[in-house]
Image (tube, rainbow, N blue to C red; front, side, top):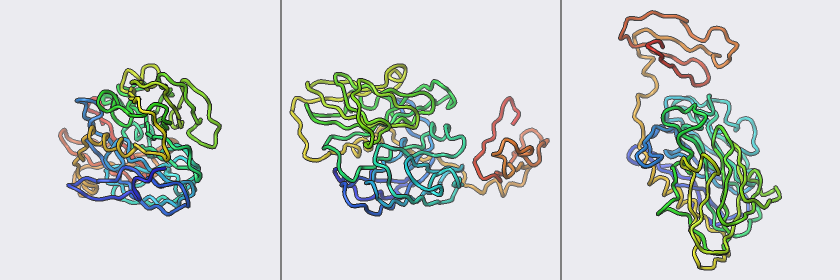
Length: 373
């Protein structure tokens, strides 16, 4: 694989976190990789004129693509710079301390995940704080690509991370947007993907949706697909490949004729943001080594999303609050626990400010309905 950047670097600039988009290296001997991901609340654009509040890794949806070689020793420092709990759950093989379920990383805390990159394939990472589907929909996910020790056939490479977002109702079973790399119809018009005639194109297709499978279809070619995104699986010939939520596929395709060809999920998704184009030139392509276009994709994503951090009061405000307060009791995550609030009932004067103190090990929310909290 083409080496694009040697490490994932974290810096502070104008109050935001800047991060190199990918960790990409030539396949070969395992090395040690250390990087940092920061949970940050950000406002960004997901479609023309549609600006929303999101939860992110390093300020974008999806977060930066992480790329390693099979066998690499990886250490990820996770910084939670938001008001609620988050984690990093990585697909693949690792121990329970790096599984990203427990501990829940609370506001202002850090946690380090350490693992050996395994197996090779198109994998993913996402938040596993509760409710997990909400944290994923809000934007806390990204691609994790692990290259095999023996390089795959040279190809032009792209990442296609499919997600969902509904600005009005993140519990909607049919959301308003089915995004590709965080922006509706991102690769239409001036921002098409590019390939040469006869050139091998490799697409790392990842479904970060939370509801239904997203089929992946390429126009004007039958392609090879590695099921579940694992090179250890035998590839199949496909016109369309089904990719369920939390699953992936590696797609390899060539086009015999020049032209402009669509790629998309068949059905409702293609009409709500899941549509792109690949421009195939008349020039005959033959690669001696793989060329990753993932950094270009990330730069385009950041340009379109134009992220800006959300300002909020830091943790600790509630503890200095002198008015009425309610504690969310330790163990409230367990539905079998009878008492989750202390006190269970309170009466306050209209206009009073009530502080909610979370003593549990996971994040909770407070919802007001009809004037009753």
